[in-house]
Length: 485
Image 1 (cartoon, rainbow, N blue to C red):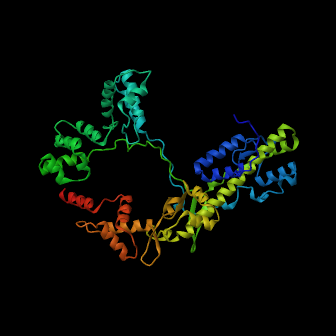
Image 2: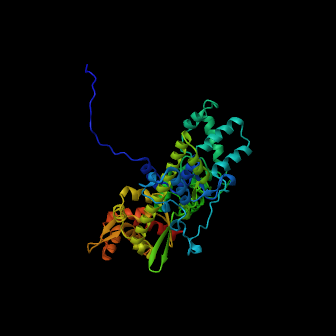
Image 3: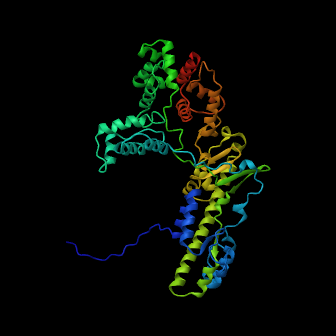
């Protein structure tokens, strides 16, 4: 057995100071997360207050700006303690024009819409029907378990045994009982909800059609056995497999196409929030300028009352207040660094993509994180954090900052063109192709080469699929089906 001993070892480790950790965290937060984080810090730090929410009585002293607060703090703790700071007193305020300037904006750039949260979600809609329907107490619990297992489109992805386990131990039922309740839930409004597959959803809606509906029997066969042919618009294949006449098949297909394969999608299940930009872009003469959203300015103040307490108090109270004052200084420097970085990165993107702002996607230039990082003088990871879940309002709409980055393809003269611009050209070619003879991927590749863009056929196929456009054969079948009907 080895004897224990002491050894001295020299190692190197990368350690981030708390202030740097906070700055990195603030940079990667989006607008809503930043607001919530600042609110948490303000709630925990008595030396910080929102400008518009003065909580101190007048006799105890009004809140003051950061300039005055920091000057008071210097008098309290001594000038030498602040002599080595990187930021001067005039840099502590978050009230600067850089972050609040909105003059000159037209109504087109205003935040027009507010999210409507009054609409009913699918879950609420179904639970209301369950309360009003003649469900037994046990069946109502089973129905609620089914509703809570639905996704946003109204589909049930869990198995019957999973629902049974979720009810235990309060409710003990067999799988047959759950299946019976499931069939009742599927008949609630919207009909077909809680289906496990699109085929089952369509079948439930077809079975709910009025008695004697023309074409319902053939439509049920198609939904049950040949749904892939229906999805692919393979008209000839459906005629061959079903043995139906052309008129009967048209009737059945019209019935299927009148149904909703995603019954829950029309409900406000996601409670989406309207995007509010972090950066605004406007044209000033021949130049494009970026400004940060006013919400980037938290409007914080140091509380004069607690600053005066710091001067008068001693011992543990003074230590506590000094610690909170240091936290406030770190927060403000981190916020300033975040805003400065976001503005620099945004301006660099706009300077590169000026042609996009004028001519649209077809003029998008190739851009990668490293290029912006080199121009701004930061690391690539910093650019990545600054552009993730941050949005820019331009005359062409609102875009995530990540949208302006794209790979490139080579041109015949040795230059580069962005993938976004190439996709735009492919979209234009397909929009203007002859309907009776859609362009193949190879033909699109050749047409692009004639314009100076070297792109392989498989790359055209990849870009076409990313645009949600079918192959030439699929587009040809869709055209024939349109002509048939």
